[in-house]
Amino acid sequence: VITVYERRVTAAEIPTLRGHVLSDDDRRRADAIRALMTTGRAPLTADDRVSAETALVDLIDDGIVEIDANHLRVTAEGKPFIRNVAAFFDTYLSTPRQGPTYSKAI
Image (tube, rainbow, N blue to C red):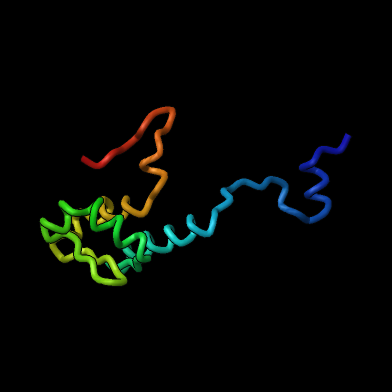
């Protein structure tokens, strides 16, 4: 009996395939997080802008984040908190999870 893995190797294919299927929204959010983490700026859609102004109001008031019509920007004072700001774009952090949580910003 030939297994699926042996058949894939024989066909010069990857014998195992793991990963995640990302939606267009997942990819857009990942790009925004990557941009924020590398440049300190992330593009905002109109919907993101409204949500960010509400969700990040304390960070805006503290001078950690600035928001204009098209971008969210972390200030120099806010750089130590950039992961907290990036969490805004991660919709899966607000989704209840089963199992242990290994880290959480306070």
